[in-house]
Length: 387
Ligand code: NZQ
Ligand code: ZN
Image (cartoon, rainbow, N blue to C red; front, side):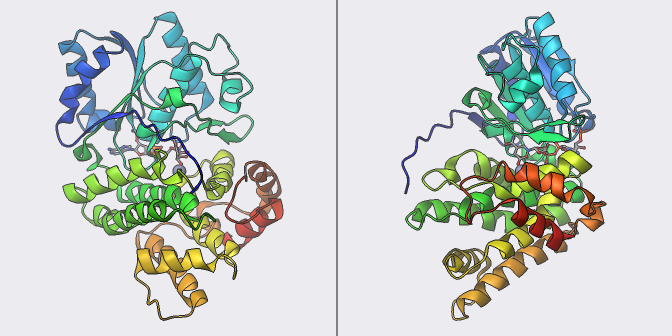
C-alpha cells in the first residue's frame, strides 16, 4: 500500500425527497447562486420546480445557465463565468448529469481566477485560485462528478477534451435522489454503468499486490454495477437498482478506490480523444475500448490481477488455468456490455482509422502510472482492434 491522504468532505443527502435539504444547505454558502443544467430533463422530471421552490423558501436569488451539452464545451463555461462575474454570484448549483455538474465546477473554478483565458484554466496553463462552492444534484448514475474533484471540458475548435482536477471543485453538498434517475433512458443507463465500471477497472488494475482492502472495495463496486446496471436498464423505476447504481457511481471515482494503489486512467485517456473528435457518448466509447484494453495488457506477469477479477467479480471457476480465467473474465465484461446493447466496435459509432494517429498521439501524453507501459503505438493497436 502506498501512502495516501483521504479527505472527501462532500456532505451527501441520499434518498427520495432529500431535495428538501437544498435551500438550507445552499444558504450556508450564499444567497445569490447560478443554477447550471442541461437540455431540459430536469424540467421534465420535476427537479427544476423542486429547486426553485427551495430557492424561494430560503430567499435565494438565482441566475440560470441552461442548455449545457453532453461533453460540455468551454463556450458554456465562458457563458457561466460571465454571469457569475456580472452578478457577484456566491455559489453554483448544478442539476443534471456529469456534463452539467462538470460545467458548473469549471465555472466555479474560473470565476475568481482573474483571467479571461478560461481554456487556459482547463489545460492548467492558468492557475485556479479561489473556487466558488458547488452544490451538485445528480440525475444520472454515471460520471460520479457529485463527489469528485474533476471536471471534463471539451474544446470543439481544437478537438481537445481535458479533465483538470482541484480539491476546491469537489462539491460541498450532493443531494442524491434515485427517483430523479428513473427517466434515464436504457441507452444512457447502459452508458453510465460502463462509465462507472471503467472508473473502477482503471484503478483496480494496478500492480500493488498489497492493496488488499482497496481491491475488495473495488470488487464490491463492480459487483454492484453488474447486479444493478442491467436491472435498471430493464426496470427503469426499480428504486433499489437505481439507488445502488447511483451510490456505486459516487464511490467509483470519489478517490477512495485509488488510495494506496493509484491506477493510470488509461482507458479514459483513450476515450476522451474519441469524444473530443467525434462527440460520442462517453460511456459508449469506454464500453468499446475496455475489453480490448484489458486484452492488450494481459501477460504472464500480470495475469494474477485478472484471476482476482475473474474469480471475485465474475465467479469464474478457480480450477481453470490462470490464462483461461483471465480470458473468460474479459469475455464476461464484453458480453455484459453487449447485453445492454452497448456498441462493441468503433465502426458502430462512426469512427474509422483516419484520426487514429492524432488521437493516439494526444492520448499517449496522458498515459502515466499505467498498469503496463502504454505508448502511442499501443493506443493505435487498441483502437485498431476495436475498429
Ligand atoms: O441535457 P439533459 O436534458 O439533462 O439530458 C441528459 C443528456 O442528454 C440526459 N439525462 C441526464 N439525466 C437524465 C437525463 N435524461 C432523462 N432523465 C434524467 N434523469 O442524459 C444525457 C447525458 O447527460 P450527461 O450529463 O452528458 O451524462 P453523464 O452523466 O454520463 O456525463 C458525461 C460527462 O461526464 C464526464 C464525461 O466526460 C462526459 O462529458 N465525466 C466526468 C468525470 C468527472 N467529473 O470526474 C469523470 C467521468 O469519467 C467522465 O469523463
Ligand atoms: Zn468516465
